Amino acid sequence: MSASTIHIDGVDKVFHSGGRELVALRDIHLEIPAGQFTCLLGPSGCGKSTLLNAVAGFALPTRGTIRSGGRQVSGPGPERGMVFQEYALFPWMTVEQNIAFGLQIKGLARDAIAATVGALLEMLSLADFRQRYPKDLSGGMRQRVAIARVLALDSPIMLMDEPFGALDALTRRNLQDELLRIWAATGKTILFVTHSIEEAIYLADRIVVMTYRPGTVKRDVLVDLPRLRDPAAPAFNALKRELGQLVMEEQQRHHNDELRMAAID
Ligand SMILES: Nc1ncnc2c1ncn2[C@@H]1O[C@H](COP(=O)(O)OP(=O)(O)OP(=O)(O)O)[C@@H](O)[C@H]1O
Image (tube, rainbow, N blue to C red; front, side):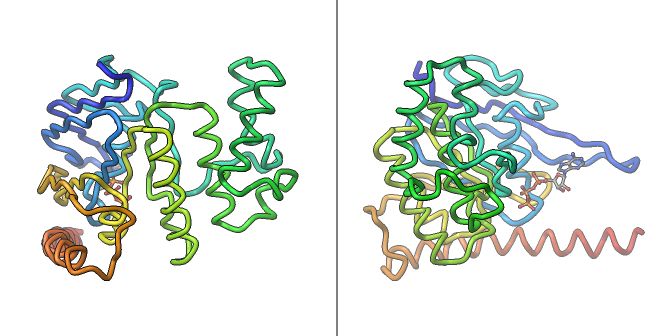
């Protein structure tokens, strides 16, 4: 069994809040092979982050099991690195200190840390910014640092929760291209949450469309288009329309649910 295979088997997640029971995930089964780039796609509230957090080991399922590399997930682990939307950098550390942090915790020798950090600064075009603090960086640069931090630990699995959601369109496309390059070069397994249909088609080998509450797998699609993908190509647009229809159905359910809840309150 490869260290980077993910098995999600019969997973439910139930939250209790304000005296109500909320079934966020129901009976999710997914097998994600090593090296696959998978996107979880769906409108707000369909449980994408809940599922990703369960795989990360931050919030375990109420029922069912998740295994990574054959081992049951019971908490965060070094084989699973997480990149969040909100960068999650230490504001008091420079770019290079942020990237080096995890390696220092692991107790690596100073030379080895310097070599890894240097290579990542180059790979993510951060070399000129190594002495800067996060507050002096653009959103795109901060997210590069966040990705470099996870890459430094060399986790075979990368979990990414809307990592480019806060970026402008051009920066977003640049980082998508960089991520694809890194993924091709490293062979990592990537599980990536997005609510952007175009982003999912641009990036993924496989798109898992989720239903709105409870979150279940609505459609599991393999994307068989050559990379780099052209969002203007007819096949890209045909898939965009097909997925758009599926996501819209779930958005409508979300909307109806909000109206129903407003009527109860
Ligand atoms: N800690 C929690 N306590 C109670 N309910 C929660 C908790 N975390 C998430 N939920 C609920 O679970 C459902 C799924 O939330 P989740 O954040 O996973 O959705 P999402 O698809 O990632 O949406 P978004 O794109 O808005 O982040 C939502 O209805 C949310 O309100």
